[in-house]
Image 1 (cartoon, one colour):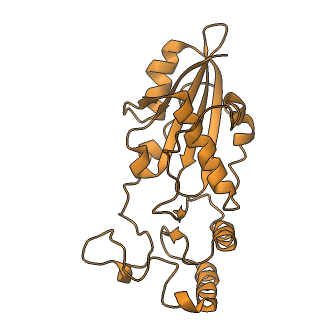
Image 2 (cartoon, one colour):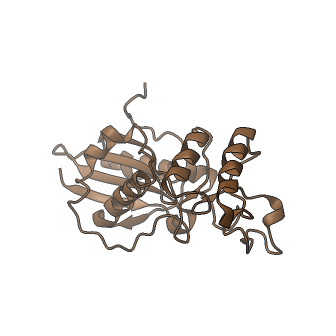
Image 3 (cartoon, helix red, strand yellow):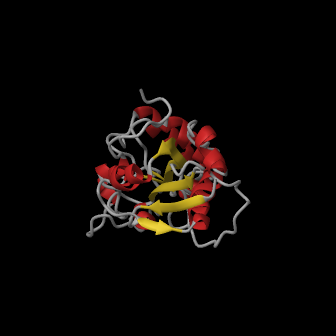
Length: 234
């Protein structure tokens, strides 16, 4: 089934999260589509799904608007779509992080990881380091342990949402104490680290802080279900 098109939301590079759609034309004329929510900063594919036998009219007039919250997406090449998805998967695997379980099925819509040329123009992480922003469903402690094991304290950015648990604070604090060179560097962003401009980086922390990069809107982060059948949906 030939690839019929690929899309991503406007501003995905600044947001750090890409919602990629890849569509294939079925012999019947219907659309087979895969949707991939990709964290380009750290964790790779956070979720994915697919749908079959979608009429072109429903795809263009219902699925695309719902998935992108009514904002027109950018049409991109199939090469760029694959580079964003597979590049993020490989980046996350290098940090000990696996793609979401749903990717086992949805990846079948993609070409193999090495099938298409890459531009090397897609950057992962933030300023050369992984940048972890926890999602509500994350096993935050396990992800932080993987980051510590793979790159070490001081070599990744961490911007917690809400109050940091005692267990996480203890984990990061203990690791910092073991590294004398980084003894004054906190692995956790706190308000005291913010300089005059909101979202700036404290000179001695080297950490990314909330507000420094625009985050996806709530509608872009999780669009309403697209009036089409997907696996697991009744």
